[in-house]
Length: 171
Image (tube, rainbow, N blue to C red; front, side, top):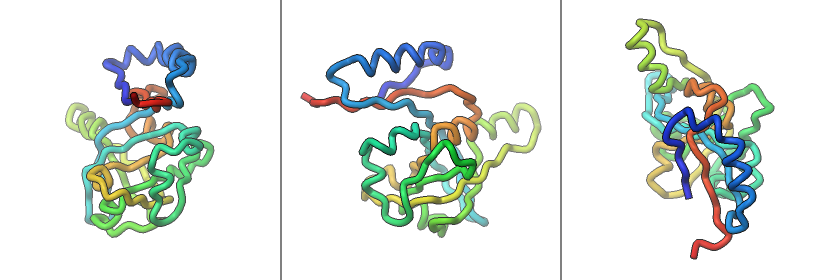
């Protein structure tokens, strides 16, 4: 189940929402996330992607990506300063990217600020730590980073865009 915040003012309630989610018996796990559209570049190739930042503790849970690693490893630690990323096989093929490559990323939020303020866009570097393969459509446009890396890249400081919730029983 995915719960998206309707406004960034709702971020003032995030801690109490997280505590509430953790207290509900029917919820197996929950994690905060942030996501947004960005342009991913390598050399002259580019790809429009959704960047999704997940909490470091999510690595301990099986949300599907860690078990789908095709090359490299699932390493999205907030403690490192390397801006690690996990990309889908389709994204890797489109950009001719492999594990260890450095990619440039610019969020649509940054592009909007460029148009308004006539400034250069902020571009960040991501290092490919892993490539996942699921055979699903999202593989072609969804990349994963740590929560802090995505917040920085999307210009969201300490804000989140929602929670993902796993139930004990879907019925």
